Each structure stands twice: as C-alpha cells, then as structure tokens.
Image (cartoon, rainbow, N blue to C red; front, side, top):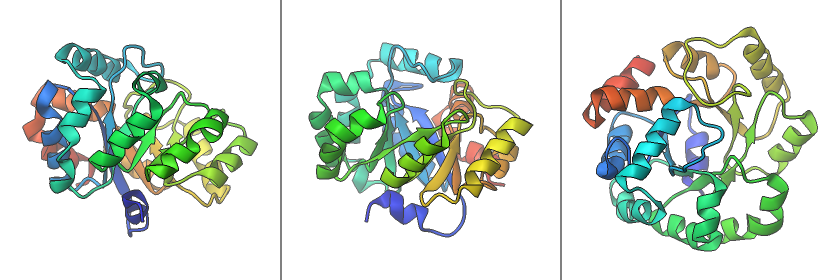
Amino acid sequence: MNRIDKKLNEEGKLLSIYFTAGYPSLNDTEKIIINLEESGVDMVEIGLPFSDPLADGPTIQDSSTQAIKNGMNSNVLFDQLKDIRSKVSIPLIVMGYFNPILQYGVEAFCKKCSEAGIDGLIIPDLPINYFELKYKSIFKDYGLYNMFLIAPQTPEERIRHIDEISNGFIYMVSSSSVTGSKNTFDSDQLAYFKKIKEMNLSSKRIIGFGVGNKETYNTAVQYSKGAIIGSAFIKHLKLKGVNSINEFIKSIRK
C-alpha cells in the first residue's frame, strides 16, 4: 500500500506542509523534512521551484526565485533526497509545474522519484486527459500517485471524473486565486466546502490555498480529511529559520 493511502486511512485529521526545495538555503531540504516529521506533520509536499509559477502567490513565487538563485534544480533535488527514506517514514510528494518535468523527461523524472521513495506528484498545470492518455501507465509503473486539483469553478461532472480516476487524495483548492495564507475563509468558500462534502466523493479531500493558521486549519478539516499549509510556513522559515519548525507546527495544532 502506498504511504499516502496508509496515512489517509489513519484516524484523525491530517496536516500537510508545503515548502520550496532549496529555500531558505540550498541545502535545507533534508533538514526541513526531518524537522517536519519530528514535529508531527503527516505529509510533506516538496515544491520544485519554477521560474513562472502561475498558481502561486508572492510568498511562494519569491521563495521559488530565491531557490533557483541558490542553485536548486531537479538533479540537485534528487541528489538531496537520495537517502531521505533512511531518515523519515511519512509520505513525501513532489509538487511542481509540468515544464521542468517534461524537460527532464517524464519517465526519467518518475524513475528518480521512485528511487528516492517519493510517493506521488502534484502537477497543477498537467491536463487530466493528457495525463490519462500519455503518462498514467508510467506513473503506475513507478508506483507514483498523481493527485488532481479541483477548484470552486470546477464543474460537477469533472469533479466526478477526477474522483473516479484519483489515487491518494483530491487537492481541493479553496479559491480561484493564487496561493497565500488568509486569516479566515469567506462565505463563498464555506459554501463550496459544504457542496463538495455533500457530493459524497469516494476520494479523500485535502484543502489547500488560504490555510495559514489554527483557525483556517480547523475550519478546513471540518470539511475534509486534512489541510495543506504553504505560504504561512515559508514566511515562518524566512523570519525564524529551519530550527523553529516545531514552533510553527505547535501554533497550528495547539
């Protein structure tokens, strides 16, 4: 069983943390992952930096720009992750845009992910039909899950299709705007959460975009299996560094 499924089948609500590989410093990747597991985080999303991140707000964009300046790329990341499975056991997901993966070679990228013990990928700009037609079998061959995103404007028919073909969880984007943490969710977002919950999908859902504190985390998990925090965590790393990760996680899960 994939580590993502094992985690999703556990009791309780999940906290997943996103960070940009190579930020704040190039060689922080392993330490951040280890510290996150030690702090009680359930899953980690490792962001592969890209020069034109369409869905990302200013915090993640800035971290991506800095990571690239620091020298981060796919080869560096895979080198940093080669021994990670001897040090952590939680699910690890690589989140990145399709262009760098395509440039690397999709099968070669999947092979490297599998060798490093990565459990799945989230590729926001990879169309579902394109994935099903060209890459689904490659992901399966290497034991990797590909998690799809849904958003408030996603038609019900498409959501049902995603539910049918999904492995792991559905990444439920909380708003149609870019990433970034907020203090609360508005009434439209809550109505969207409720609507999706009432669809009784067979796949577990994890909410991301706009989750950044205890309040938004607790609200999100009322409607889902868990929540993903990215921008707020990256801001914390910028201010307080990689040795203060436990402090941030405690502020979410007091």
